[in-house]
Length: 305
Figure 1: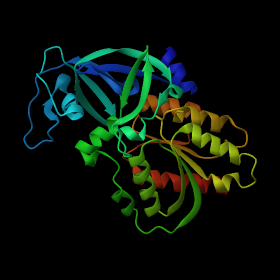
Figure 2 (figure 1 turned 45 degrees about the vertical axis):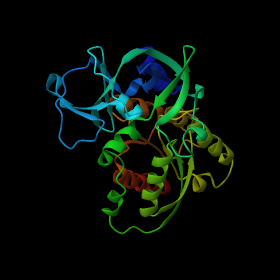
Figure 3 (figure 1 turned 90 degrees about the vertical axis):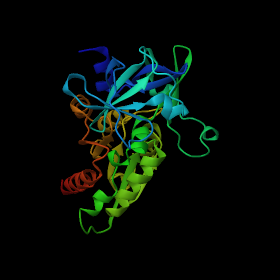
């Protein structure tokens, strides 16, 4: 077993960042999202596609959409070069290729060393950066690839309407704890849960804040009333969802709180790691309807014990 696997499975709050450049600027992506790096290849254009979608190409019998990341980030695509690279990604059950100029390397850092960008940089709105990290002495902007794809193809993200397909649902008084650093996704998740009858959702910007809140309830007789269930993302500054899950499930008083990991990173490898950490369920972020069904099952099962 590799050191990386051990780190992720033990929930030690570390991440590997792949650094790449666009017009000389350093950016980063979580290695867990990366399937492979390829030399840029010929791309078949698709009529009426989004302006930053170059088209499609098909390496080894897999059809991939290619997004021109330089154009998305700067509005300028520049001259295509034979030295350009495609970063092939997998998240939200989707494979996408992103054009970049160079790949610099991989650094392993703690989530504690990743800071959210100041709101003055984003006009008080959420930008496409999930955080700023210092890797090997350089500042690296970690991009929110889920937000980029959701802007280009909204149908790949959370569909709030999925909840309506569940039919009539009564209001529930269960108190839900949500750890999610994305402002946009927090709103969409809360809106979806509200439609499903879960109106009592207390959200936190990262695992550390959620953990501190849970610790403040730890000795209360009403612990399981104030925290009937925890939903957590994996990728979050300061403390990630794997570390948060590990802390909750190793605590004698909190371990019966149902934990759902709700992340774009869920695949078989991540599912195995989450299970070892004690997660009760793990779902990919587009599955908002399934999330509601699982919440019902886990909360009702714990109350029946």
